[in-house]
Amino acid sequence: MSLILDHVNYVYGGDTELAVRALKDINLVIPDGQFIGLIGHTGSGKSTLVQHLNGLMKPTSGSIFFNGEDVHDEDYDKKKLRSKVGLVFQYPEHQLFEIDVFSDVCYGPKNLGLEQKEVELRAYAALKQVGLEDEFFYQSPFDLSGGQKRRVAIAGVLAMKPDILILDEPTAGLDPKGRDEILDQIAKLHKETGITVILVSHSMEDVAKYVERIIVMNKGAVLYDDVPKEVFKHYKELEQVGLAAPQVTYIMQALKEKGLPVNTEVTTIPEAKDEILRVLLS
Amino acid sequence: MGIIKTSKLVFEYIRRDEEGNVEGITRAVDEVDIDVKQGDFVAILGHNGSGKSTLAKHINAILYPTEGTVWVDGMDTTDEKRLWDIRQNAGMVFQNPDNQIIGQVVEEDVGFGPENMGVPTAEIWERVEESLKAVGMYEFRKHSPNKLSGGQKQRVSIAGVIAMHPKCIILDEPTAMLDPNGRKEVIRAVRALNAAEGITVVLITHYMEEIIHADKVFVMDKGKVAMEGTPREIFSQVEHLKELRLDVPQVTLLAHELKKSGVKLPDGILSKEELIEALIKR
Image 1 (cartoon, rainbow over the protein chains, first blue to last red):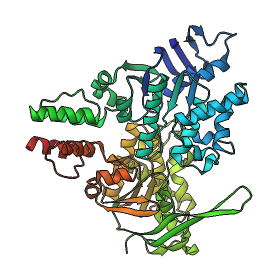
Image 2 (image 1 turned 120 degrees about the vertical axis):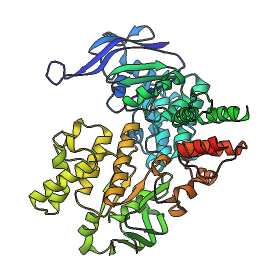
Image 3 (image 1 turned 90 degrees about the horizontal axis):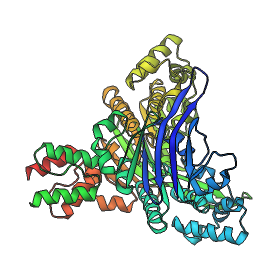
Image 4 (image 1 turned 30 degrees about the vertical axis):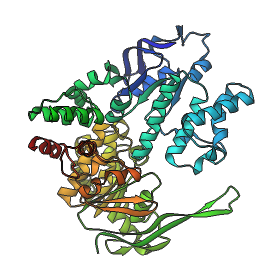
């Protein structure tokens, strides 16, 4: 079970003078069960890339293989691909429409043609996976808070039982607690079910805290693809492409420059605390 | 009286079910008294649903108080005759840059406000020029807004507001949809306006790092002002902020964690430099 992108290119406005190469020779392997962060400044090609992963966009050249099958073969079942690669768009709560939370989550699996009982079981399980309490199930989704609405929208995708869950900035506009709650829930889901998660984010701190692999996009190409520590070593290059390292990494850099012999490969607060304590006590 | 003052401001809205029957009344803003001095940089924090945006919308008379009074530059916002003066004096910038840009060309978009005020053409061009220079977007004046990055679009929105020569500018989560670079650009522009032009700034945000230079911080909870003080006073109360679903800057959190582990550090460290100095001095 894996998703492979082989020399994928995408060009907007093909034969015209305005042609833009939005993706340039992308080669990626997304194996089962990874928690991946996808970062890049606005316009770097992140959204174009994720829309290729579930077949919403077709590469101008190159191929995408899901479990060994070319997803753009004529007889390939695209509907199955879209249920297996679930994409949660930015501000997904804008897509809620049903009269109550439960019906909204049922909408996806119902359209897969499943039996009513199976649909409801999946909806229930999905709402539990995002940590929504039973008391909200029969409320209008529009009466919920921003963070709750967003969880309902994520549950709607989870109810399709995807193997890969892609979230495009799931925390934009949420308060700090809401951010932590959603990301903790996703991390828990990843740990318990082994689902592959691709998190598109503008927060370097969140990416450093949760993911095991980071893909950095710049100008339509993959700039870095490595574990967080390795990627954030290139903080100067990241700044040049509109990104940054997590703030604690800068603190550690500055401490080292001032003569405190700390390891600068630190990217999260608990690590920074332990590292500073280690140096202070030694 | 400051440039913005509220006295026992209450805002209630009526919730209705699908048939239009009254279900109940929600008090979104509950007896809020704030007083903002001319030229101050004020931040409003609060979790989703705490009432901060509702409060902000009173400042330029998008909403009117259910009870209490709001004055902008001495004008009561319920005074219909002064409505345009109030809106011109208190300009607002919203979260999504794509929802507030209307012009085909950057300079036309910025000129829209003063044009509607009946400013003579020659002066409109002067204002457009100075506004775009103030936010560092002058070189993009002939560009189409569509082709700009999120941070650039937001700076054009801000230029559009300052071209109306307001005394204060209210920004409701202007960086929520931006990448790290875009966030930096916008905050730098807002701070420059405040420092160089003396425009009063009210900044609503979920990013704690953005407000460490503010003169004053108000923290909203359940429609009330729950905390009020300088950034240092507010961010010293890490646990209280967490109860209010908020956070502190990463540097402050790291200092707090180190203190809990027994490292002697002063309270309310706000910047990387302060933390480093305190650690080196030990």
